[in-house]
Image (cartoon, rainbow, N blue to C red; front, top):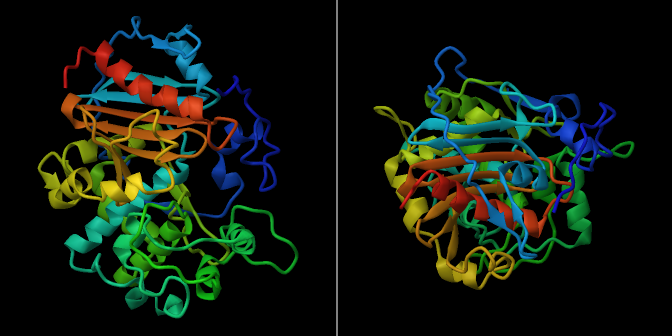
Length: 391
């Protein structure tokens, strides 16, 4: 469980920005540390979020020790920087801590993958990208390497056969733009993929979480559409959705976007994204993401690939009835939950049965904190109970 974190001083840099206590400040000030590309929002025409506060005085989470946490205790225990709960499209609860405010963009870490997945759906609906095509159709630079034969769908669902050894992991870290560089080094994601030399293994097998898959997907998106990822997100998703706050994505030294984890947005815009998914890709009468793509996330994906995959046991305390589809996790227990997740406690939950969206941004000290993850999932059900939901 995360201890309370003090607001870090602004000495955060590439050597320490993901380390407590610097991380709390850094996650809200990414532009000061990393290279970024701005994403256009619609500050004058944001998707309205009426406020309808609910009482959570009865909120209570029982810990394995037998003690309980009330809502303030849960927020502190999971190092929450911001949490927003929408119920029927209205704000039932909104909370900020650690220097964060309504206008503060916060890094989403790997919840970025869920946005990248929606962008693929947008381009597919426009006839600009084929999900069943091989990646090499769009990025021939990787045709002779270990990604040969992998499809766009394999990237989306984390079903490539890619296994990175220590040398490849170091090269990927350097390429990301997130690490300090030695003299003469360049952060170059495209170069990493073009020169990746790990042994080939078959694609299309069990779920295997490989973050480079989604960075490569970003390259596919840019090649297919002939435009930058940041420009595409702003034009096709963020502005039409009514996102209103400062938004950007981290980039490497050659402006390639970190589509696996570099998206930075305000809490309200993160929640708006969840509301868009809950509404089957619509904002009012405007169909932004195709309903077919959202339905595909909800109903498709290979449950067997999850059961045979890397994280089955890690998520067993939450559910054994799960799938991963197009960058989204799906829990098929009742009520079905779709969620986006990033390290250090970034979460977006979509509970359509209860008309509930929960966006949570955090600065947990460790990248993966099993008890914080477990508590956060338990809190989703507890929020629903407090709202009187029966879905």
